Length: 242
Image (cartoon, rainbow, N blue to C red; front, side):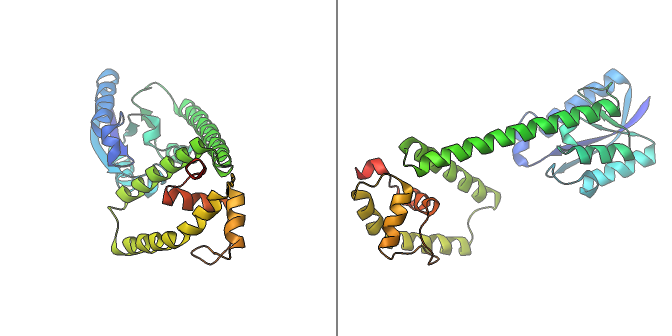
């Protein structure tokens, strides 16, 4: 019977509600152990981003030490529990034999190949997402109402996520929000004046504000991006001004 040390990882507490929660990973590993005659001598669990190198994660480092102590292999439920970086996975495989519960018969070469393919696909997805967002922003800057609404929803979702991640707003954050709100209120009449002039692009609005000698909160000139943010903050759009 081959000794193995189990390593279970989630990136955030949200992982517990996903298909890769701790209990799901434990079940994968237990099932594979029974089917392949593995003896799980220890298990280590941690909440950490997969972008951090395995050796730099406290519990993963303990798991590696346990592998050496028990002459054991390192087992995870799925390969991405090791990480999403080929370099990290390759580095780990140089130190210990890695087994994956969902493909228990895969050797290090096969695992390295799977990791490389997965990383390439993630890069493709990231690039497609980046291109789609760039196209959306271009349409929003040209005054497309639907695109402006989509950008607004995405911005609000991101801000909400940041608030949850940081445990809510602190006093400094609240003060900054209040200051920004007060500034936006002083700019609103100027912005509405430009919109009522039937301007239809963010660049045209930026030029209008600049011609009035009205600067941003930092005293700089207005850009299409800055105008878009202001319009989103004030709930204004080209169609509402028409």
